[in-house]
Image 1 (spheres, rainbow, N blue to C red):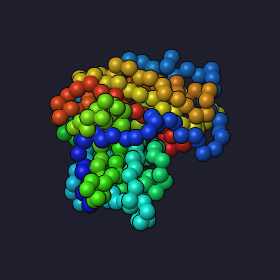
Image 2: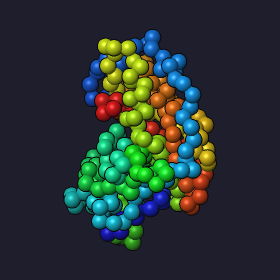
Image 3: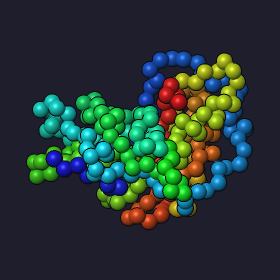
Length: 259
């Protein structure tokens, strides 16, 4: 079975991923709190000093641990799973905030690979750093043989269709670090729980050009605004097309119970 661990963006069928519902109903930020009003200047651009986390084919890579589910029927199916994670400076997964896919068996297979495998870490000035990234695992068949492809991209549908050699932007320092800065500003006795999703657009120099809230659950909780405020202060790698800097976007899914 071939496993491709490249910056190759491969197609995923179906609708755009929606934020998942939280597992329990718990208090959320007060509606009177506006994190956007508490923020200072945007973070400086450092993308020219940074490299993104990547996947490889070595024995410790997540690609080494990716397999079709053991069930014989599943081995004949095709599936797509998107993952959203914080990666440590050692390249291990610190938190998986969401797995998006229609088949639980394949989602479990991806989570197992994330638990056991690692990425080549992101760096700043040659030093390994934590990073938030999102990616897509495609389980398919070619000439009757199973094939698995790993892409460090989820957002750009046009590049998906072209099977472009593309890596989307990543959040340097990780999502937990950025959200923690905002959560510290929330008034006492306002615990945070639930899920929000946003899209971060980054230019070819690594500057944030736009942050758009996609959704939140529970609705009206204010978690979308909280996530947007956190992302407005983030530093990012730019996207890579065929190894060259380009603009791009990254979907950010935040499960606040894990932050």
